[in-house]
View: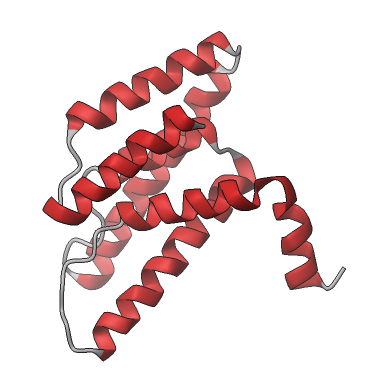
Length: 151
């Protein structure tokens, strides 16, 4: 988990300050993730989920550009989705993305109401969603069922 969250945290701070996701950090992190999944005999599964997350990121990028007529997702964000998918899979990745988008939308709405139009980088919220996911990880299915289904 440290090998995943530490580079993600560094990239989140850099993205917040500069608006860029540098390949020098992103791609070695992605390669290291694939090496770790190879050692753990999950390489094929990691490659599949990583590819699907990357395609999902490209789709969100295209959809945002089509709907808003401006860039809604940066060039590096689909690659970060792919990095996330190596470690977090299935419903858990969707849950993490939901937490990330939800936290980012709350801050975005706050900025809209304060009349401060500013570039809002996604990566800090992806890190926040991932951090929250790992805090909830052992009990997240129980919490989701308790909150949404009253079970």
